Length: 134
Image (tube, rainbow, N blue to C red; front, top):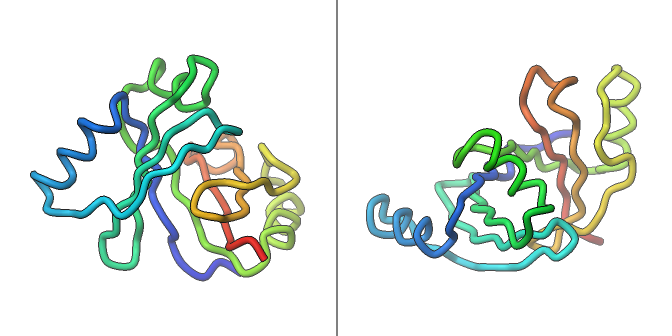
């Protein structure tokens, strides 16, 4: 079951410049950075109420974020929903005809298991399910 919007993923070209904007112009505080080698990205996290913002900078031209930036420029990359049981949520999505990018959850940022749904099956929105690793 989906419990809340966990975070919005935002693709950026330069993490340091973007962090400066979010801190100085918006008054938010960066509460962590992390590199996710499997996705070839560096991340920075902000909180806006109960929703987190995850800035994503590619570390390689082969990164999904690099490809997104090349095609779309900077901006919202995905919406992530917190779920109670990620494998069950993936199964339900698949049974409903949704195309899965990941059939098996993998380790993402912030010590979570994550999996993505293909935007061609989700009305154009790259959708992530996430839950804390147990």
